[in-house]
Length: 307
Image (cartoon, rainbow, N blue to C red):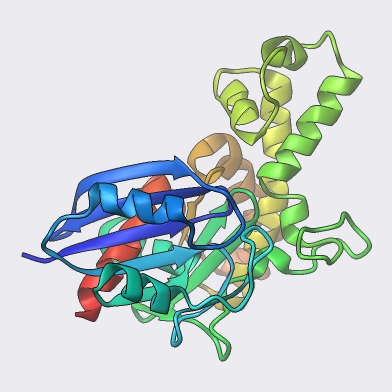
């Protein structure tokens, strides 16, 4: 029996699981301060699911990670640079650790235990605060020469477009992400203060989650806004398909769970825009089966396989 810990480290939250022989035995999710990838709150969360038989830990961090050194290099949503996450985890917890980008860990989870099972060539696209992802080639993570492959949220999508958290202009994630949907919804509510969406969300926080919930409940303006983001998402997916020609695309992250309200428009746009579309097959574009647990579960599975 192998017991490992998986840690999903984001800018404002941490999710920790204890996995025993591939099954989740315990989990905890908590908010954290964003001053660094590793905070006392994170270690407190780890200890709440810890057991004496834990053999290794894995961590997926949102941002650029050097997996060979276990080093968090930089990220627009997590503070700090050049932080030796693996070294700090091993020193504090006394067991071996593996550290990688959060999307790579999520891809591993989906490949081994989720929507990617049975496929050899997979793309994971994470859609939430930003857009990230991972490339799986022949059942292995392709990390690139610097270990940073899959940062396609920062592909140039609209020259001279909106500013991105990375400091550039017109990145893909500025038009296809949670903040993009939030911006569109707030503009719509400001311009239509008596409309159905404004009425539905009055007194509530206007964010990607509340807008997608309104879309799922049938609000037409919300559905239109989600479809607009889905269309921009589909155009970016079309570029990835043209370059990498994967067997399957798995969509995860906070907005990935929206399902057909977003992925339906994305598929239609990708189909229409795909180069040579009448002579090739659009790969399945599906929602991640592990949902928000994919990163932590993948990190735990990677830790188990590293032993």
